[in-house]
Length: 359
Image (cartoon, rainbow, N blue to C red; front, side, top):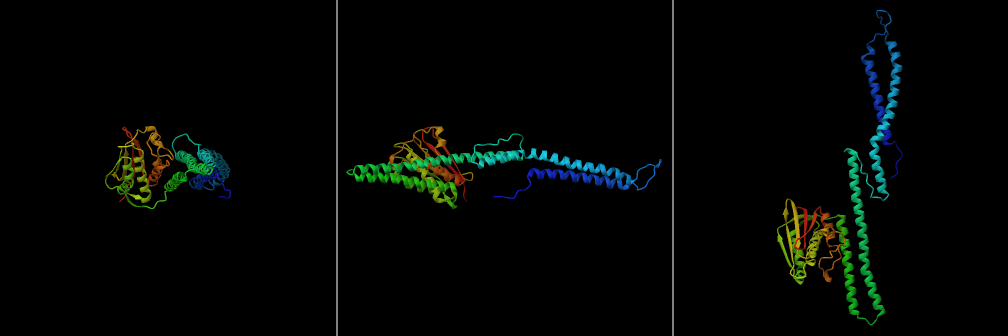
């Protein structure tokens, strides 16, 4: 927004300092007049007959007072300009950093030195904001690159299948249709996952009372056939865990956690435990599964989009799109909760979700 040019803050502070000194000098002269000169008689004679009267004192004092006032005004202007510049120097650094960030460079940091004061607090807060923005932009760019790659893959596979079918008209049409259907299903799943992830990141939620224990039972019931197919024991324990939020997104969060725990498990004989409860004013959902060991250094990366644990066992039917835990993280963040992942010493993973407790 364009604004009319005005006086700079430094100039206004300078005028304020100079005006303050001028007013202080005028008050000092007024005090001298009120408490000294007004009590000197107009005509008084001393012992030698040469004592000055009020007229002579005023004529002698007035030029010196005028010179003093001019000096105070000049001193106030110069000193105020210097002091204002020194006081506003940190603000100049912050302004330059803001302009640099506005031009697209988020890696710049102020790192203001000196003792703690209001300007240092502002500079530190600005550096923290830039760091968050830089990390967020880098994450978004990485996500966009991965999403474009993931969306391009099924399209490229579909085109290859169609090219092969065109060059070989005698091929098995049934197999072609089945493979195209599988590729198309994967593309649809990926698109829906991307839309759900974006919805969770926006945070536009319809809040209603939700019981995580009921969502856990619903997700377990829906995924029980998959668990039986993989010979995995699926148990739901604990009590009520009420919170406030979007029932649809929270159900998708629980379903993703339980599905990941079943899929990324032992080929047979594995176990998944879903526990809900209330702890210290928060509602807790804990999903624990057996499975191959997960290196601790890989655990923090599992919530990033399109990160798949290579060491974890998968099946072709449930290969996923690499957004399961990313969607969980997004939903938890949109509900002002926390998500903790920890590898089990015996293998597998423990995922703990903590959400604000409801009524």
